[in-house]
Image (cartoon, rainbow, N blue to C red; front, side, top):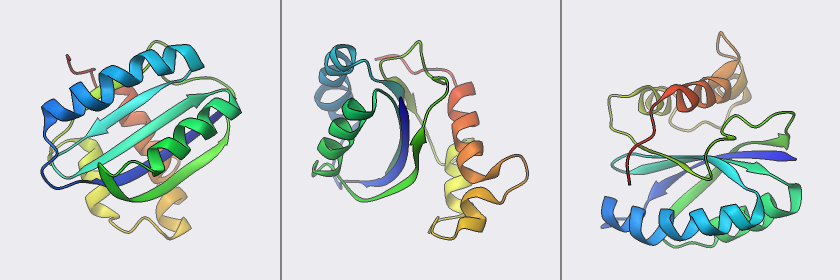
Length: 143
């Protein structure tokens, strides 16, 4: 089992309705078939996603995500073995974010997210742990 966490920039003109209809709904079935769980946060101009599941399924899913033109500047924030799923109850927990929530705040504080001190050096486990904690605690949005 493994986890991948990434962030990306949302393609210009991609609407919330398109995200739900064209990305989320088709993905729910595929995630069920591939035993993938996770969370997708999307704000006005970016995505953050957590993928959890069997190694091969997560790798295949993430390869497909990286090839998707509906976003760009994909940056892997975390990848590695998974002891326990954080989103076991969700094939894809959907969170409609905004520029004032905790995820957006962390992203704006560390916009490049390239230096390891920013990724892992924050009090309480680092940026990645903070992102995962906030996403775990936020309520799911309705489809």
